[in-house]
Length: 149
Image (tube, rainbow, N blue to C red; front, side, top):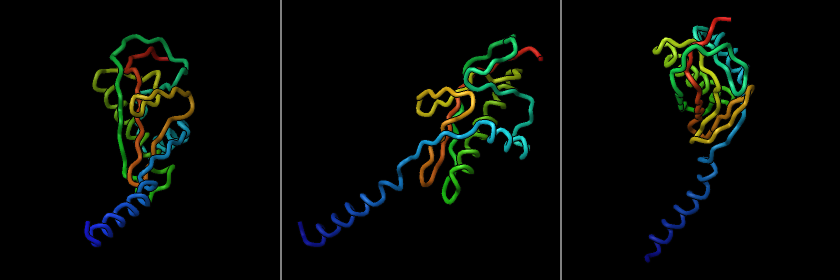
């Protein structure tokens, strides 16, 4: 191997080692309520569909329409962890809301974090994966019609 080839290989190895931590994802737990409040305040959630996280009690289920997974990603570059994660979470809820409305449902129950099919069940928090460039939230829930309460 020539001197230039060895030098180039060394540079690539060093830069690869430096860049690796930048690409790593950080897993953070975020507040469901804070994100919901933000979504309502910004008009992103219209209130037509109710969301029940984890094991929260629900009104009587009248019709079941299946399990649905929403897995949006968002640009996280130069965004705070809170902003990027909240945006991805709200995008997932909007997707769940749209799915529910499309089948005549009015709620999504048993919502859990489901990033890369790893379940995290919580009544109060959701899991966000934030990297240098992207943030992602995956939510899975059952789309249902519940009795009015």
